[in-house]
Image 1 (tube, rainbow over the protein chains, first blue to last red):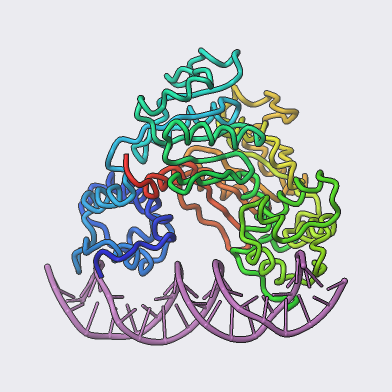
Image 2 (cartoon, rainbow over the protein chains, first blue to last red; image 1 turned 90 degrees about the vertical axis):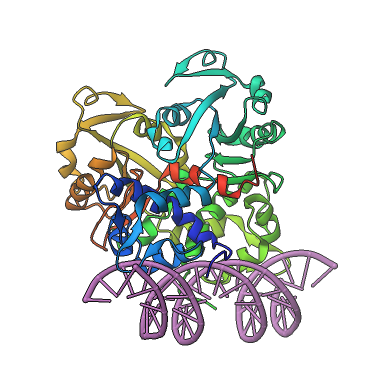
Length: 207
Length: 207
DNA sequence: CCATGTGAAGGTATTCACAGCC
DNA sequence: GGCTGTGAATACCTTCACATGG
C-alpha cells in the first residue's frame, strides 16, 4: 500500500524509530527486524510494520530492514534531509539549557542563533552561539533560519510568535504555557512541561 | 452520562482546561461558557463539552460553567487535590532550569528535593532546594515523595528509574531520550524535547 | 522457515446536530 | 435566546491473522 497518506500518529512515532535505528547502527548489524526494533523503542512490532507500510516496501522478508537505508528514508519523510537552521528566542534558564542541549544534533538540527530582550544577556556566548538583541529577529529570513524555539514568559509568547512569523519562520516549538495563534501555513507545536507532570498523578493508584 | 471511563485523550486535555480556567478566574467573571474557554485554550467548544460530560454535569445551560467549581473538580480528577511532592534527579543544565521553573506551581506541584552524582554539584542550593548525593535517593519514601523528574544522560536513565522505583516513587517524568522500563504500577511519561522539534519540518511546506 | 506487508476487524476519539434546560 | 449534555455518525488508529516473498 504505497504512497498512502501518513497518519499523524505515525509521524509522531517516526522520530522514535529514527532514534532507535541510529542507536542500533552502532551494533555492527546491517539489518534489523521489526521485532528487534520493537525492543529498542518500546513500540509493538506490528505497529512498526504498519507504520512503515505507509511509505513503501523497505524491508526484506526473512531478513528485516536495512538500517542505513531506512534511517535515510525516515529522514526524508520528516524532511530532515535538508539543513534546518533553528533560532532560539528567550535565553532564560530553560533557553540556556536548550542551547546547551546536545539532543537536537541527533536529528541534524542545530540552534544557530539566540535572541533576548535583556541587554545583560545580549552579547553573551553560550555553547558557541552569541545572544543577539531581540530587534535583530528580522534578519532570520536572510540567514535562512526557518525553525524557531520559543522559551519566553507566557505574556511574551504571542508577540514573539508574531514577529517570528513576520520574519519568515515556518515552524515553531513553543515552551510557553499558552495557546499561540499563527497563520496555518506556520506549524506551531506547544510543549507545556508542567502539564506533562500534572497528568502523572491521575495514573498513580494512591498516595 | 456520569461516571463513564475517561478517555486518555481527555485526561491529556484536562490540564489545558485547568490552566485556562485559572487564567480566566482573574477576569472577575464567575461563570464561563465552553465557547469562551475554547477561545482561551484553543480546543473546540464541542470537544470541551464532550470532555466534561465524562465526569458529570457541571455546567448550567444558558450560563456556562462555574469556574471555581469546575477547576476544583478537574484537580480532583487529576488527583492534584492532595499534596504531591516531587524529586528531581540530574542537576545539569536542563535539571537546573526545571528547578527554577515556576510553571509546576500552577498545578500545585513542587520540587522539594534534587539529586546528582557529581560531588561538585552536591551541596549547592538552587531555588531553595539543596542538591543531595544520589545515594540519598532511598530516603524518598520516608519523605513522602511520590513523583520524580529524571533529567540525566541517556545511559543513566534506566538505573535512575530503577532506584526511583525501589524508593517507592509512583510516577516519573523522563526527559532522557530513550525507553525506560518500569513495573506497570509505576507510570512513566517520556518527554523527548528534540523529538518534538524533529517532527516540525514534516509540517512545513518547503524551504 | 522467518519476517514483511496488508486487508479486515475491532476499538477509540472526534465531530455533528439537536433535544432539553435555564 | 443561549448554552449544556449527549446519542449517533464519522473518522481515525490499533490490533490481528495470514498470505506473500526471500
